[in-house]
Amino acid sequence: MRIRVIVSLAAIVGLLLCVGSASAGTLAQSLARVSVPADDRSADLKTLADARTLATDLGGSRAVALKAIIKSATQIGNQAAFSPALARIVFLELQSNVTYLASHALPSTGTRIRIDGVVYESYRGQGLRIQPLGTYFAILEPGQGIVSEGGVGAAMTSAQKIVLTDGESYTLPYLFSWMGHAPNWQSAMAEGVAASAGLSAWNRTGDDTFLDSAMRFGNGALGDAITVENNGLWFPLYVFAPSYRVLNGHMQAVLSMNDLADATGDDGFADAFSRGVATTKAVLPTYDTGGWGRYAIGEDAPVKYMTLMATQLKELGQITGDPAFTDMGNKFTADLTTPPVIAGPAEPPKPLKLKKFKRQKPFIKLRIVRDKPVTLTLRFFTKQGKSAGVGPVVISVSSGASRIKLNLPTKAGRYSIRADAKDWAGNKVKNVVLTTLILKK
Image (cartoon, rainbow, N blue to C red; front, side):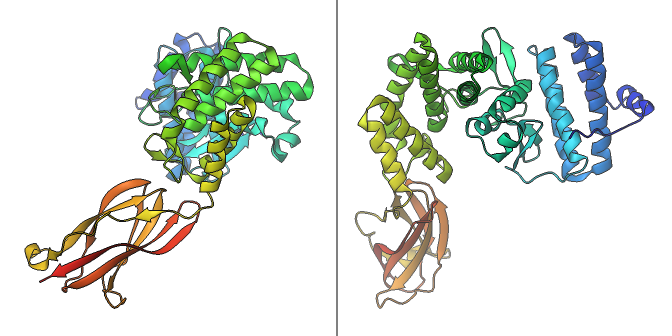
């Protein structure tokens, strides 16, 4: 059900003409500049007026959300790439927020909801934003919501409203700022998932319209891919950040290329799959910490992405017959259930003299190695095995090795430093002796 916030004609005119409505004026000029039809332009400006009025009436987080969407809409309107087609999506997002926020609280950050067949996600300070990846993942792996809306065919048709056509390609704009990059931006992963969703709809319905959509989304993903070492191919999660290599996003698009090649027999998709597989195999060791997987280089994968990567790798292994993928997929699965491995320095620290610290608290920077991201609980014990009265120190750290500053006991003696550790999946190890330390007066 769609709900519109009603304002009087006088209120609309006042909002559009008042001196303080610079954003409204800018959007009005942008819509005129790209020749949005008069009727559509009038409806869009009314939506803008509705949003401004609602923000004033509601206040709080909902006002912040609406103002953020107006701001990004204005940014996009001022871009050379602005077009009637892009305006349609921009104002769809704004209208959906007006409709929803008029009668609902703003969902907590990360919450996803479906409105008229499109998935929106709540982003902190940015409101409900169209989530192309979420929209097509829901179609690719349909739940009860998709079924109740008429199935994957109806869902694909409904999602067409968030699609831009670029020649023989379909692209999916994201309309909000992300990682410091202004809207709008694209994701090769989202286009790859949309291609697979189109193939799913085609397989279920036999409607060649969905096969055509799948191919166009595949072309969009290929257009966003980058050529890397040895003529390999990488599909960036964020097209604006090609050097930020997110493994699960790349692999999802690679798998989509295989789906498209199987369905169409197209050599271009088959070549893209082959080049993407070669790149994946070449970089795979750098995405393994020894006890965990990396989301991107230098960045541990959250549990949900560990699970996804394990599934993707096993699927690549099944398709290619290459045990390197299957083995790593099985390893990531095992990593989710095995306790962390932690260790202190190879050699005990040299004895420390407490008097050298003078007026400051005595401390040590202890090197600790972790094969996983963990929460460490660090304690000092006397030679007799009793608590030394320091700490415990609780700290969350990534996989790898680093020196962690620990305050020391203030009395001379021999102490052991012990650790408990819990990884992101909840696996634990307890009472690991990291090292022994002698403190002198």
